[in-house]
Image 1 (cartoon, rainbow, N blue to C red):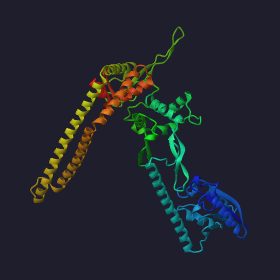
Image 2: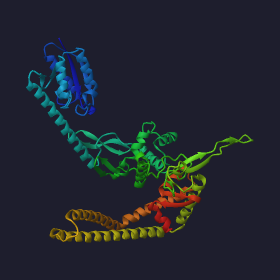
Image 3: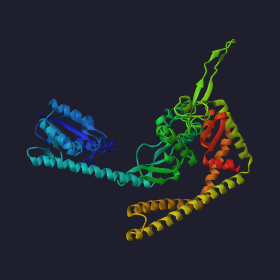
Image 4: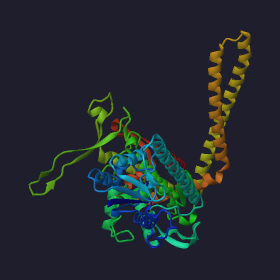
Length: 530
C-alpha cells in the first residue's frame, strides 16, 4: 500500500469557494480535493494519509523556504512518512523556474513519486526528462508574470473609471452593492462614504494640523473623547497615518500612477487642510530635520520651537530649562524654572558666534506674540475687499516683474546663442578666437539656459492668464488668516505654536532681542498690504 500526501494551493483566499465545488470551478480548493481523491482511488494500492492546503499563497512570489506547507512535506519525505506526492497540477508546487524544478527533482531523489492529476508522473530517467521539467516551470513562471501584468492593468483600468478596485477599505468609507457586475456576471462592491466614520475625519485633520498632535497623541486624544471606529474599537495610530495620506478624502482616487477625480467620494471640504497635513508630515520626517520649520511636537512651552535661529551664526536655537525647585518658608514649592532658547553653536563653541548664548523664552515669545497681535488687529480693521484687491494687485505686479525678467533673460541667451553659432563658421575657417571644443560647450550651456528661461516665461504667462485662480487662492488665504486672528489670543499653546509655524517662515534673533522675522509668502502680502 502506497501512502499518499496531497498538496492543494490557491494564490488568493477568494478562490476558495466551498459552496460550489464543481470541476468547472477551476483553481479552487474543493475542485483540487475532489480531482485528487478520484485520481488516487483509481490507482492500485494508493491511500491518502494527509491532505495539506495552502490558502492565499503565491507560488511565484513566495519562495519554498517561506512556505510552511512545502517545509512540512519535505520534512515528512526525509522521515519516509509517504511514498507519493500528488497535486492537481505541478504548478501547485510553485511557479519559479529558478527553484521549483529542483524541488520536484529533490522529492524524486528522496524516493518519492511525484504525480499530477493532469500531467501524470514526473520522472528523471533521462536528460530530456530534466529539460522538460525545467521548461514546464519556466512556462509557469512566464504565465505568472502575464497574470500579474493583466491584473495590474485591470486594476488600473478600474481605478481610472473611479471605481473600487479592491484592497483594504479606507477609513471613512464602506462597501455596498449597487448592481455593478463583473465579466462573469457576479455582483461586485462599490465604495460609498460611511457617514459615521466620516464625522471623525475632519476632527483628526484639525487636531493634526491646528493642534500639532502626532499619531500617538491623536490616538489617545480620540479615545479620551470617546471617539471609536465603526466597530467600537480604538482608532489606531496606523489608521490615523493612513487617513492623513488618503487623497480619496478630497475626491482623488489614486492607484499607482493613475489619479482619477471622484467628487462623490469627497469628505474634506477644504483641500488646503489635507495639503497642510501633508506638508507637516514631510517636514517632520527625519531627513528634513535641517530644513524643518514645523515643530515636531506641540507639548512644550516654546512658542517658536522649530523655527527660531541665531542671526549671527545661522544655527537653530534649541530649548532648555535651568533652575531647580525649592520649598519656601510657608511650605509652598517654587518651581524656579527658567525656560530659554539656546544657541548651541555659541554655548558649545561649535563655531564662532557674536550673538548671545541664551535668550529668555518668555521675553522672546512675548515679543513675537505682541507683533502678531498688532498685525492681526490691523488686518481685522482693514476692508476685506480692499485688502484682497491690494494683495492681488501686488501678486500680479510681482508676476509681471518676474515675467519681464525671464523674457529679458531669454532674449539675452538667444542673442548669445546666435553669436556663438556665428563663431562656428569662423572656427571652421580658423579665424575665431574660440576653439571648436570650447564653442561646443558654450553652445550647449546657452541652449540649456534658453530652455530654462523659456520654461519660466511659459510659467509666468500662465500665472497671469489664470488671474481668477490667483484671486481664489488669495481669498482662501485671507479667510484662513482671519480665522487664526480670531482664535490666536484665546487658543492654547498647541494651537498658537501651529499658527506661528504656518505664518512665520523663520525668526532670526540677535543681541538685545533684535528680531528679523520672515513671514510665509502667502501671508506676508496681507501684512504689507494692511
